[in-house]
Image: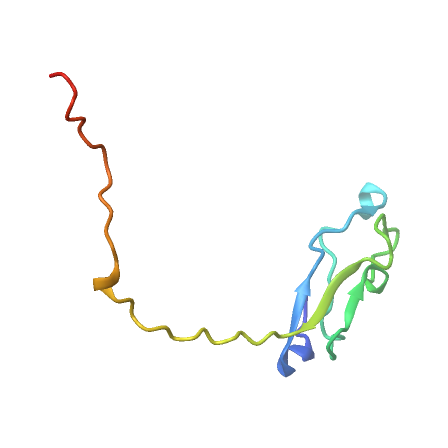
Length: 107
């Protein structure tokens, strides 16, 4: 993935859905990587699909052309967690844990 997505400056989140893509080609035409420019992602809900990728000559994809490669979504605002009061340590009951000796056991 190359370039910066303009939508990130306005609060959009870029989701890289597909990291690898299956291609078909002659061994000599096999690319070591395929660049996907994020510069076209300017608006929320924009996406890049397989058919938008510029594949080298002699290379075809074996993935459906409408499959999403990159999507953009709105940033979700995290709700601030309510600050709770410290627990009342006197109200906490402590249970005895561990093995209890059997008083009726022969020794």
